[in-house]
Length: 430
Ligand SMILES: *Cc1c(COP(=O)(O)O)cnc(C)c1O
Image 1 (cartoon, protein in one colour):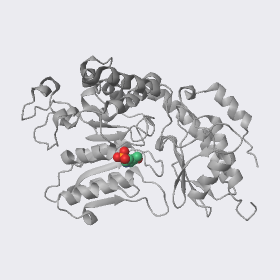
Image 2 (cartoon, rainbow, N blue to C red; image 1 turned 180 degrees about the horizontal axis):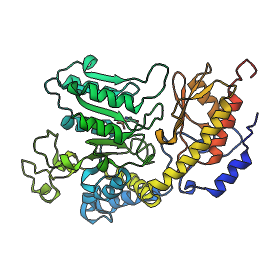
Image 3 (spheres, rainbow, N blue to C red; image 1 turned 180 degrees about the vertical axis):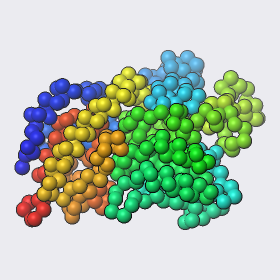
Image 4 (cartoon, helix red, strand yellow; image 1 turned 90 degrees about the vertical axis):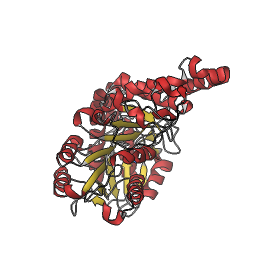
């Protein structure tokens, strides 16, 4: 069965609105009629930018040719390498350079930030998260609560959608924060929910938390590089994100961290320190007591892994060159097209989009609930019979992310066409 909204139309849209696919390696398809994968899993692991390999090799060569002297003599000296990432990372999330640093992995950074920003005191002991929080975040907050000698069963509050609904409502989050302010120490939410693709109204929830005197942090793993962000202006306390999803910096790539200017240089905030937490000018004085700078680098601990920084730098430079506003515009067009196609496939088949239909309440990802076929079996067939790579969350959610940098209208059409072929028609006819 082929879809009415035809392939030729998708090809025509791609000619008119080509994106930057030529800058990426697209994996070959494992099955189906096309040579290339229709890659819809960039929300899980972004594709490799073509430029990364040479950039990485250049950093490797500097180590080969210079040894320890590379710290100062490499073309991109290692001692200050991380500073090259600061400007573009700050622009990506709408932060000031002093508020942004790239370091460690995401969950590690959430812990380092909670050392400073989860300070249970008196009756204010609770952490609010979403019930559908990414498991790593859930484990992180539960272990932080235990670290303070408290009980995660009572101190971690999980926000659930209303009965019969799939996503949270901003008004419900705001009401909760207002009502539970006297018990809440921290709210830590995903900016874009990894499962449902819902984009939370970050400025509104941040404002509500701040008004209630609750510290507010954001996990932006699914938001950074997906939707425009203005963390400084929105008055967010802290945030962290990883670089291997929409930022395409490779598996396990480094994480970015934001701490709002008003917290920089505060002597009363506990932090864990290492030699990279001290100001650069006196780092090699090897003094026994640190002198932390009045920037987010006070939260850094170790010297950065140079070979892991090249891919992040390459990626951030690309985002800088293209710009989030342009990417968001293209993203709205691509995801809008996929949304229309999925609605067409869903007529008469067991498929329902759970992501909000309002484009302002989502990034590029659309999550669908599938019927009895199951998410794992469906994605397996999409991959091996149609060359479509999507992401299964058992038991019944499949996530599709048309990524504005490299996905195409034809990819979206292939998703819908493959779903139409694989999913049985309700009423029995296959
Ligand atoms: C991907 C993701 C993570 C992954 O954490 P790592 O520490 O990078 O392994 C954590 N939280 C969220 C919300 C994610 O989407």
